[in-house]
Length: 79
Length: 400
Image 1 (cartoon, rainbow over the protein chains, first blue to last red):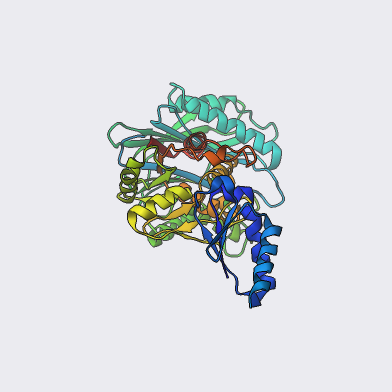
Image 2: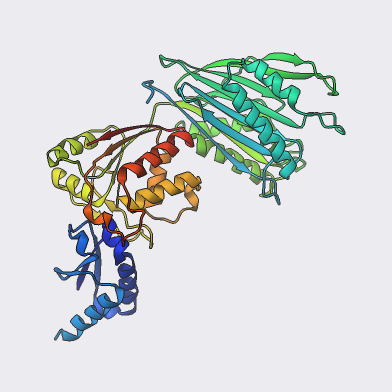
């Protein structure tokens, strides 16, 4: 699973700093999940941020807890 | 910015005597508003700790003030000497000093007047060769003193590659009483040490050279300085230039001009801002990679792009750069984030060219996000001011 996080000023300040921290922690505790984290420059969606992309799908306005639960959902729904 | 071919790089390094939290050695340097004169003063107050610090500070501040006045150098020094009290018990002056007054001429000529009172004699190096300086002794009339008091004065021309190195006796007397250095490190051995360092690295910065000297001195004191140890270095060299591109240009049609100006620049390059980086990436057909290994809760990660020395996020990083410069935080004490790399590049440069794009990101005006995400022009102004006033850098600014 590839998760891209917008590291632009606005998204970083609106919560992606905390999201990245939460994801790094989650990834280190769930090594079997194969999560690839990547930073991204401004996605030009600042006003709806923080922005992340999970396997290409744009997810907006999520905090760390919401991102983790979204991640769990996606993993559970996988065959 | 002065059009001259050379710049003057001034820096110093210092250890306090073991167990002291304040120093009796004081180094000050500043530049006049016309930017054609730099004055450096190193003063060593009698004893150590608070009393010594007060005396040395007083001396150094007087020297700085007088050096910028129309009074000539020798007369200034005499005023200081005659103002300084003489210790009742020891019959010696409370504070020694060395002053370097650097005059930057219109055409690249740089001259320095050296005034020395009881500190170890300064060194003049031309690349790795120590050059003897002819001194004129000026006898002072000080009835309270027990010995003939004299100042020494000299005037030297400084060319590219010249250095003046001044130090307090904490350097020359380090190792005193040890088997190897019963009389301390001494001036001639310090000279050979510096010569060796300069032979190994002719381009060493003033900061690194000063630090190498005090570290050696502290090592000779077995790691526990027996006195305050201070060394200051003045280096004349070709300027190291840095260009900083921050913010997208107001008109998109200026994007190409911005990229061209930066990429053709002879010197180091920083791109400050994600959107700005995307413009460069698009125009240069180079990928920008975000490096997730160096960030913390306050500072977004840096990125990398071929041909650019540093790519960072914009406002949060710039704001913290301004704060750390204003606090004069030593770079080595900063955590390994983009701010540290930024400061390393800024402080190892002599001239900094800012190219500021004035497009405003509407989302940054949202009251829910930190106030640090403010106005780019204001933050750049703060950075320029502190670079010029506290670090004696030359800067220029253009808007796009």
